[in-house]
Image 1 (cartoon, rainbow, N blue to C red):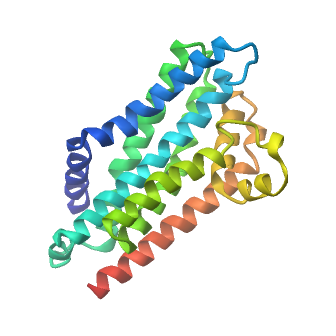
Image 2 (image 1 turned 90 degrees about the vertical axis):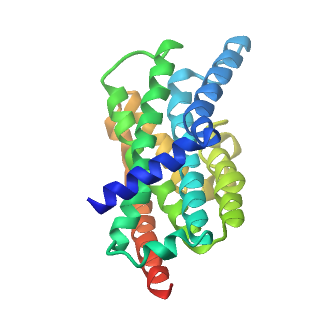
Image 3 (image 1 turned 30 degrees about the horizontal axis):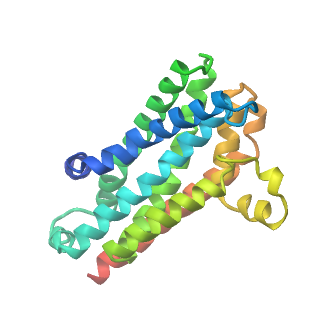
Length: 243
């Protein structure tokens, strides 16, 4: 019950900031529409809607890390979190209270993204449900990163890392803008040691109905989501005990 009350408070903090709502829900849609218009204006099918949508959906999740880090770091610096540590709430209550609203927002963002994609040419199929479901472990990766940064860094530093750095990292190393095979070499090797391109590739496979193609990408995504989530809980608990 305590975690749900805290989750409700976190939700209100997110909704209260119009920039957060824009970046979380509107900006990925604007980007999807813009790239679709560009694709219709060029002779090459560079931004095919079936390949573009899973990439934009994953890229949009990077803002969840920003929201998580910003809210958590702000609570720490304002001493709001320190005061809450005197209550019976446990570290699990805090983690779920911060993470649950962002998880719901991630799913909502994915649903909206795919609905818009259908209106601009994406074929309707059951595979869309699978592609949206696969956004859940991916969102846990970004939420975990946000929790870690929010726990360890100041608000300014956390926003910098989870804002410009992480969004650019996830965009350029996920194959959203270009096929990584065109670059190859060390750049591609580095990209495939990170979860972002695996999240996009398994989304593409699911959307195409090629469920065998989800593997082995899903193991990379699940591995990163579990490790980051567990690490975030451990670090937050230690910080809680230290404070």
